Image (cartoon, rainbow, N blue to C red):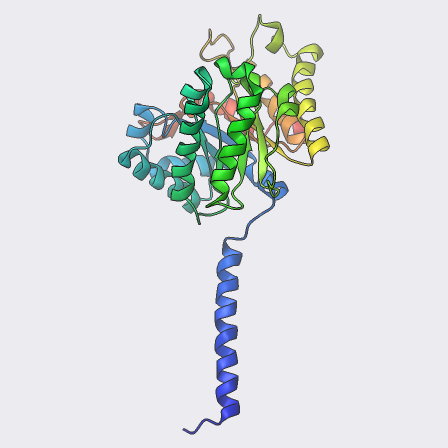
Amino acid sequence: MKINLSSKYLLRKMGILFFFLMGFALLADKQVVNSKKYVSLLGVGMDVDWMKTGQGMKYYDTQTVKDFKKIGLSHVRIRMKDKLSKDKLELLDKIVQDCLDNKLIPILAYQGNQFKTNPNEKTLNEVVEWWKVISERYKGYDPLLSFDIIIEVTDKLNKDPEILNQLYARAVKEIRKTNPSRFIFLSPRLRSSPENLKELKIPVGHNDSVLAEWHFYAAGPSKKNENKLWTTGTEKEKDLIREKIQYAMDWQKETGLFSWVGAWMPGNYNDGNDYDVSEQVIFAGFVSCELKKNKIPHAVNSDTKFYDRKQKKWNEKMKPVLEAILNPKQCK
């Protein structure tokens, strides 16, 4: 078959078009969403210990991810505290991929205990180095994977907002070398309280992919502590919750950025555990509804209270609480 020059030219153009379309399709498959869309995708999630404790790592299974997604959770906050050994990184690879394969958004969060208890140049650099390893390992991964720089600002770091902001500036700069548009969460001091969001210095060139993480009631409500009081759900008690949320909403309006509640707990499980399930349902439903009304995504603390990782099944006793979190009746 004889092909003239015009035919060769046409075939070449068609070939170029084919590869262009293929490339576009690949890009579309991993299209970078903006922060507004991202927070809407986060919805309701859960804090998990799959990479934080020995038991969490031992009993992790892909089935757990499938169970979380099936019940209606949209993301998990994967908390980590140890140095990144080869074995731990390989397990993290599996967890991240399992989440992405099952459309459960993974958020990697670092404990950073040494920096929190002794904030100085050395411990700051150790946190940045930790994130350097993570960011290099996960460059090119699905843009839904995100990074939460430090879990709950506590201890001596509470009193040093300047070095906290230095950490964020350096960590974001390091991550941006390999992940130019990865979503990154920054948390304010004093146990990540929304009142202190205003102290955050957003790194220059954050390109719409830096968000804030804050939380309240991370260890649950209290029947005695006036700062997190919840007895029967009086208007005064509800206003404590609304006030915290309003701090975040005001910050969002002022900065044009978005936020996420990285942890809240329906009961005081680690401090008396004196709320019965029916009381937890009322509290959980109200908190979840208020956050939903304000379009703030949130993660519930934590997986071991709701899911039996050994048996790979949900705790039947706690299902009403989980249902109140996922589908608060107050919002219907």
